[in-house]
Image 1: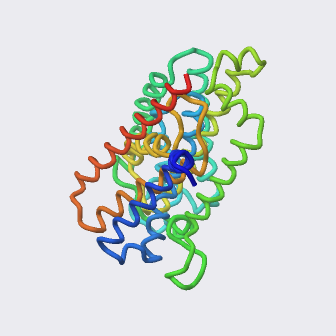
Image 2: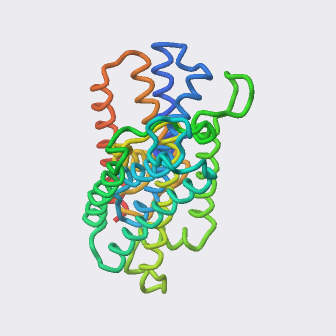
Image 3: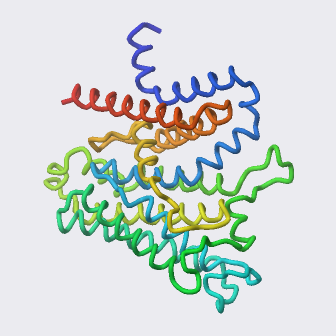
Length: 336
């Protein structure tokens, strides 16, 4: 393998090389980091973030952005948690509500996320508002709506707890009786979602249109792609994924407040960019996004594991984000 081949291989697989180097560096400092239980904990922490990042990838590939993702996670977490409390819990959000089928609140939360995504898509595609401004407005409005819902009597802005075990099992349960080698349900759900998104990206007309819109929106229009309709579909799918992530976050943590999901959109954008999703649009893969999410989970979990000050974690993440974007821009300029 010559120097050019090595350089090309390193460029194409930089995200995976960085991930391996991170794990090796932390493992050298503390060999217990590579235990199976540690890997499982990292994957559990990554699961909801991965679903959010996959939703964000849809938007970024079209050349847009979505600042409302975290607040959609928050409102859907509150909606699902508020309807799935134990009947014996003292501070129930809906004291007179019976024990309804778990699927109903979950579907309702996902539909709420989808509808907010539809609103984002309509504002961007039909009103021609830049995605940054459109989703910034939605972010603020959704947080206000969530806070109003969270504050209704008799809850009065109290943290929602006492969730039913069948619901929390989605976030904390696992397949297998052996705790060391068990597979968490939430990880399986994230993998299934990633597989479905991969199919949409690579095997559907919507996926082809998404890349075409992000690559050159004028050319996409000329080629007969219904850009506005496709953008609305894409925002709807992203919103539904945020809604699912909100449900799983409530199940994983066993509760919810109106501040759930705060700043999650920035982590999702960072994971996508680090995972190779171009800020200019038109480029991005599901494996890259998943690797980007895991990298940030390894940073968070690994640096905490070895006792590094949390503030240093923010600095490391910031440096990685800036470096990834700078690298992406250089590739884009070189292509131009």
